[in-house]
Image 1 (cartoon, helix red, strand yellow):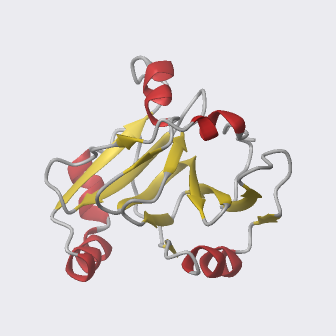
Image 2: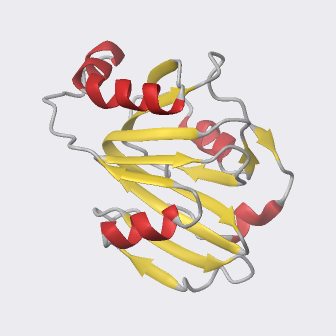
Image 3: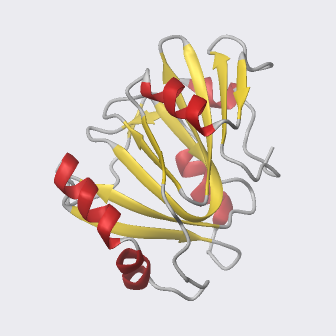
Length: 185
């Protein structure tokens, strides 16, 4: 449900998408639960004075200290910004691209500067639905099966960090599990 304004973690058995076993907005609990699975979740101060017209350079400059810390700590070499909103062309096709379960050979790191979207991670017999909002940093470990849903009318901007200069490269699993779980509407 997209009306969520707070960061939310829902944990489902991967065989039961009807009812989450856990549903929490407690950031300490989210950090603990995701951390137990090797997933990094942090809350950054997202108070930089940015506008809808702020370009990639301005957004990266506003969060330079945190970006540099992550680059040093994890070896990221490439940083960019993805911004999706009402004027983004072909949103249905863009959404569909990320709705199938896939993996990456490196961590998938996102810091949400504005808006919200949902990551779904399949780990140890569970599906973790992490609804990220402004100020959330999520780092999905390499080779973790997951999918991403920006919703039917997305409005978000996120900083992305990569080790590989080629950026986002997906390896689709072919498993239909993503179609069984609630979408981010």
